[in-house]
Length: 304
Image (cartoon, rainbow, N blue to C red; front, side):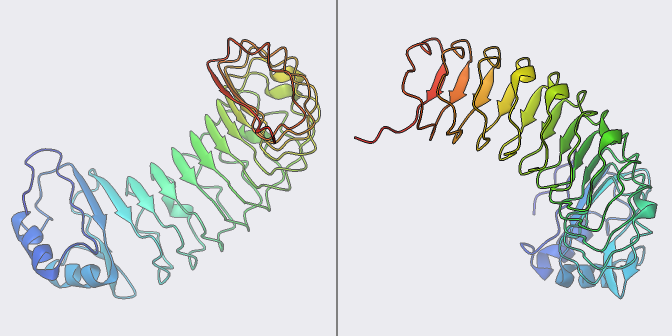
């Protein structure tokens, strides 16, 4: 195996044989003396056990060796996807990028507040995320027992997809990229007008989106209780697919507009300045003569 002298990334996973793994440890001087600033450890059960026999400077969970931390200042990235034996993650607070997706025995994540990028998707026993407010990128997909996200105001990119227990998102207005898809308990999004990228697909209880006019990228797909989108004319990229809207006359300044399957729309004459327009499955639209300036236009299929 050829090792690069600069920006070395060590990947240890199912693709490595035991022989190659030992070779890697040997080449990097058993890794704990490595001079490289960045290490990426992607361990499966076989290689993690081997790592235990080769290296004494490590952290163990139930005899499963997961990570060596030789220098806490290194930017360590650790992928522990689907390690369902893991319960205690309190020793991983210095990891830069940590993937604990599907580790659904974990309940306490209070010591992970200094992790830069943290994936806790489908860790469905977690209830308290109040100590994760300083995480830069946080993925809580499918964490259905979480109800309080008020302390996540400083997170830059936050994914709360299918977190059905969340109702109040009023404190998340400063998040840059916020994905709330499938959060069916949310009704009030009036405080999210400063979010740059906001995804709300399948949030079917939302009715009023009048305060979201300054959002740059807005996805409201399948939000079927929304009727009035007149205040969204300044949104750059707007997805209204599968919504039951009728009047889109105020959306002429939107750059990229998705109206796929909005079957109640009949008049698109005011959308001539839209750059990219998707009208697929809008079966009641018959006149597109005013759309000659649209750069990318997807039209409904006409049955002959």
